Amino acid sequence: MRSSSKKIDPSVHVLVPKHEVLSVEEAFKVLKELGIGPEQLPWMRASDPMARTINAKPGDIVKITRKSPIVGELVVYRYVVSG
Amino acid sequence: MINDADKEYLEQALSRLSGKIPSSIILKLRDSIVNSQIEITREEIDKIMEMVMKDYLSSLVHPGEAIGVVAAQSIGEPGTQMTLRTFHFAGVRELNVTLGLPRLIEIVDARKVPSTPMMTIYLNPEYAKDRDMALDVARRIEYTRVEHVVETVNLDVGGMGIILKLDPVLLKDKGLTTEDVEKVIKKLKMGDYRVENPDEYTIAIYFENMDTVTGLFKIREKILSTKIKGVKGIKRAIIRKKGDEYVIITDGSNLEGVLGVKGVDVSRIETNNLHEVESVLGVEAARELITREIKRVLEEQGLDVDIRHIELVSDIMTRTGEVRQIGRHGVTGEKTSVLARAAFEVTVKHLLDAAARGDMEEFKGVVENIIIGQPIKLGTGMVELLMRPANR
Image (cartoon, rainbow over all chains, first blue to last red; front, side, top):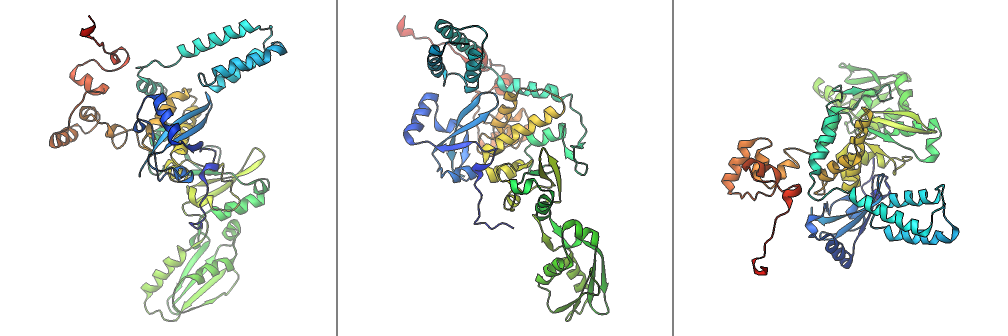
């Protein structure tokens, strides 16, 4: 039915929160603030549809801004791993 | 109520809090100060901010708190009151939906396919208001094969032919005509044949070079299983009014396929298949779906479980970037500690494998420390005393 060339953009969906790749400086700042190594963050595969949409490569840290019913806006980070 | 002159002061005070406390609390705080019955002065604003901050910090979870155990109890205890009945009629007469305990187990086990896959498809505004337009989309989604519109199939062994008699009612229901069916059949590669139409709803196909009856049977199966239209995996599509728009509810789920159908609102489409959402929308969407589905199942049974416990479950399930089940093949099975794994399921296998590999036990977790009778690293057990003899 659907041709493979016509990929839909997952970021328009209501279930998908905002994703953005952090620059190296920002990533270091975040890790320092949290006092952990990058692999201690939750992970995200480089093959994940959203990782591909924002062009995140293994080793990057992705900032995710969720809309939560209890705290309003909630920022979490995921470490992009290969796979 | 505050003075106009103090408004800016309030904003400044609130902006100092942002980043320290959640934005929803700041919004509520601003609302209640501005709408308060009594007049609030600058000193009182400062005092309020201080008290809110203190209150917020004292209600945070303490370091070392066993939140996993608390979450397990908070979901497990109300779970004992859930009905074991699998099927529930969720508003749609024709569809059964698994809810209650079986569905909860299905979610935390992260089954590849739910026992009752289901989608709720919202439509673009130009399709959503009109019943016929919605029906048209539903027909394009529903997976229809030749056998779904056929009343009888006869084999003419003498003339080496297959006679299909179509059901007019079914054809009308699916929005098809005899020509549509004929067109699909003609696209098949079947060798030399000629097609006759003795009457409006009959298609007769006669083969020239067919020598065996077995070949005829094979062709019959091929014709009957030919797809006329629709998205694979969608067994039925029903339209239903929701608010002031029509939505399509389907039996069967195929997120990727349905997303390509014209008229479907891509941003609101829903499915209960976790793995489809994970592969099409990503792990964050899957996390959100796990939370929503568990919450819905519990709420539907009249159980009120705090969403933080459910979010902990979904966070753990999606931690490694893919959906893992809570169990032997997922979260528990990937624990580093041998004793913790052995304490859960298939004890002997884990102990033997660990012995063969020469694994180390580091005694960092809870289970393994309980097994050998050491204090666990939780709560006050988390901290250790450090003595510096040189400073004496």
